[in-house]
Amino acid sequence: QVQLVESGGGLVQAGGSLRLSCAASGSIFSIYTMGWYRQAPGKQRELVAHITSGSNTNYADSVKGRFTIYRDYAKNTVYLQMNSLKPEDTAVYYCTAHITETTGWGSDYWGQGTQVTVSS
Image (tube, rainbow, N blue to C red):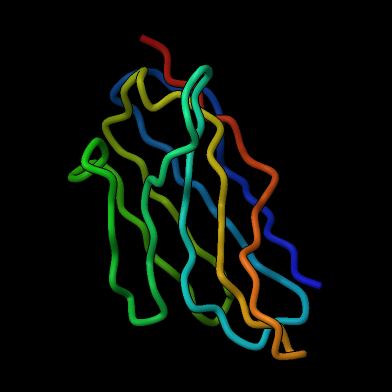
């Protein structure tokens, strides 16, 4: 069994910064990709950023130049550094990862989400 635990959300003023963390634990054989989605009230869940095992990254257009995703391979942890935050960044942020377990079974896993609120 695998678990993803997010942390780092909170309330900040526009222009401020937050760093989200997501640590994977459990019966992990390998992690191919890790990433972040977000969901704002009344909107579909959208991809924010993801990073592969080869450190290739992809970002939503709305966050390019402001957010950075990076990974600590030894700790099975992914981070999202969020700078120049805007009120429209307010959402619940969810960590996700595609993980192959020690049994050989590969699955997509999700964290419980962490709230990010940006005040104007």
